Image (cartoon, rainbow, N blue to C red; front, side, top):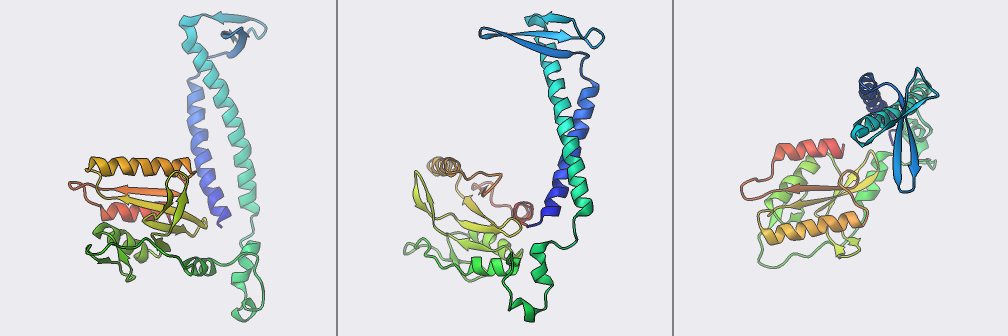
Length: 263
């Protein structure tokens, strides 16, 4: 758990938003928008700064002005929220101790570590326990080609060898074809269940290797949709790679993807 690092990333994002909104407000029209509802219809009025008690009705042909004023109001509120959050984050970072309570265990002498129960297991312990889980994967059919990874495990294709070996070389813990239950499909065996050690979260990696086959591609889309319906999304806990006969797996892209999503 790297709270400080995550807050620094959040701070960078907020600073980017702050700059974008400040630039947008420089181009925003004068005045503020007032909205009144009449039945199912909305009526829009502009209130000028120099005449705060007067409002001017905006007909349909001036709806773009209403949109710009609404966006201005939104951007101003976003800026205010961003400013408050940045202030809070900067104060926390400024006063954040160099060692958090969860990290004290790692600073102890090994003789003492064996005698205490830590608040939070170290990454090494967590990975060791995660990798020690026993499971039964999907069986292989007879008379099919055999492919083996650096770890000596059997996989189903040359592309899976590339992915498995890249994960292994980059020190990313993974399980090959670890069973997962999805409503709508039952028990499936994602190609790789990868551990994001930093977030201590499993990421399910499916490689779709025959996307130029229409029937295969249709099944792939159905599986991806089923993952989403079960709460597994690309930006969070799933990862998909694809290839066709003319567009084989790109090892450079795989390395970059692992570094960006799993390190």
